[in-house]
Amino acid sequence: MAKLELKNLNKTYSKTVIPINDVSISVNDDEFLTLLGPSGCGKSTALRLIAGLEPPTHGHIYIGDRDVTHLKPGDRNVSMVFQSYALYPHMTVYENMSSSLKLRNFEEEEIKKRVAESQKLLDLSDDLLNRKPGQLSGGQRQRVALGRALVRQPDVFLLDEPLSNLDALLRERVRADIKQLFEQQKAPVVYVTHDQVEAMTLSTKVAVLYEGKLQQLDPPQRLYQTPANRFVASFVGSPQMNLLELPCDNHRAKLGALELPLPEGLSTPDKIVVGIRPEHVRLPREGDEFTLEGRVFLVENLGMQNLLSVRVKGSENQSESGITLRALLSADEDWGGEDVTLALPGDLLHWFDLETGDRLRQ
Ligand code: ADP
Ligand code: MG
Image (cartoon, rainbow, N blue to C red; front, side):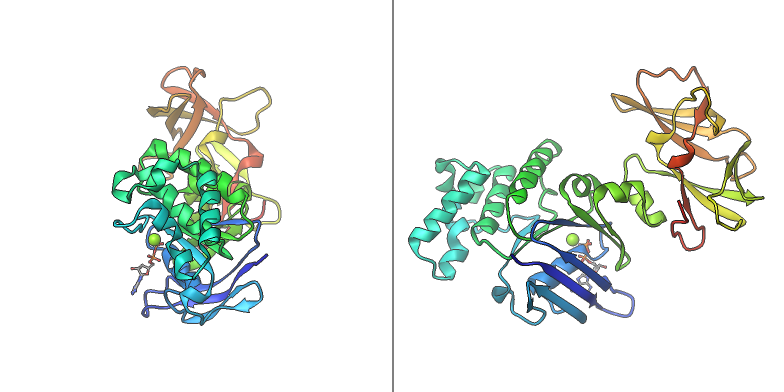
C-alpha cells in the first residue's frame, strides 16, 4: 500500500518562527513513525501540513505516488486523531464513528461492517455505541476517536498527542492498545508526542525535532544507544544522561582524578562533553579500568532502584561546586554510606563536541 514521503518540507511563519526547516522523512505502510520533541518544536505543524490543513512554504508531500502537496484535506485520504478527541457531542458513538463515511456516501451495509470491525478491534461494547461522548470516560472517548480514524481505512494515520489528556494509569493501557492496533494496520502512522517513553515503546522509528530541524531519524534502540548529538542524548532516556563538560589534556578528559582516554582518531580539544547514562554507572568490580571516588549528597528512591547524586572528588576546581554524576543503582545494592566508589564502563561513554554538540566517533 501507500508510503508517505516528506521532501525538503519547510514551514516559515516569520523570520524567527520556522517550525519545520528542510525536513525529509519517508514512512512505509508497515512503519510507525513518532515525531518527538519539546513543546513548540513544530510537531503539530508537521501533522497539519501532512493533513493539508495548512500549505507548506516549500517542499513536497507524497502519499504513494501521488503528490498531495496542494490537495485539499478531504482529497488526501488521511485520518487524524487529536489530543482533545474532537468528537461531536450531540451525536452517539455510532454516529461519530460513521459520520465521515456517511459524508462520502458509503452504503449503509458497508458502514455497519466497518464500524463493527473497529468496534471489535477497540473492544467497545454494543451499549457504548448508543451513548453520547458526554457519557463516556476519557479513555473511552479516545477509543472512539481512534475508531473514527480506523473506519476510514485511510492511506495515512496521523495522531497528535492522543494520550496527553489521560491520567497516568490509563495512558499506559491505551498506549499498549495503540501499539497492538496499529501493528495490524497496513498504512503509515505518524504519531506526535513530547513523551520519550511513548516514542520508545510505540515506534518502529523516531524523528527527533528541535528548533525546526530533524536532529535524528532512527529506530528507538539506536536513538538510545547512539544519540547523534547532545540534544538527543539529553532528551532520550530517563533519568537523563549525565553530560559532563570536561577539560582535556594529552588526549585525555579529566574527571576528578580519573583520566578518560579520548576516542581514537580525535585531536585533543580544550574541552569535551562526555555522556554517561545513570543506569550504566555502577559499583566497581574486579578489573574495572575507570573508577572514581565521590560523595553522595542526594538519594532518590524509585522503588526498584536508587538514583544517587554524587559529587566527584577532586572535581571542585572543574566547575563551581564540583561535578555531579548521577548513578542508578539497584535498591538492593549497598554503596556503604556517604562516600562511594563508582565505575564507568568505557564502551558506554558518549563523546560530543562542546561547540557543535555533534557526536564524536565511537
Ligand atoms: P508543537 O506541536 O511541537 O508543540 P507547534 O507545531 O504547535 O509545536 O508550533 C511550532 C511553532 O510554530 C511554535 O513556536 C508556534 O508558536 C508556532 N506557530 C504555530 N502555528 C502558528 C501560526 N498559525 N502562526 C504563527 N506561528 C505559529
Ligand atoms: Mg502540538
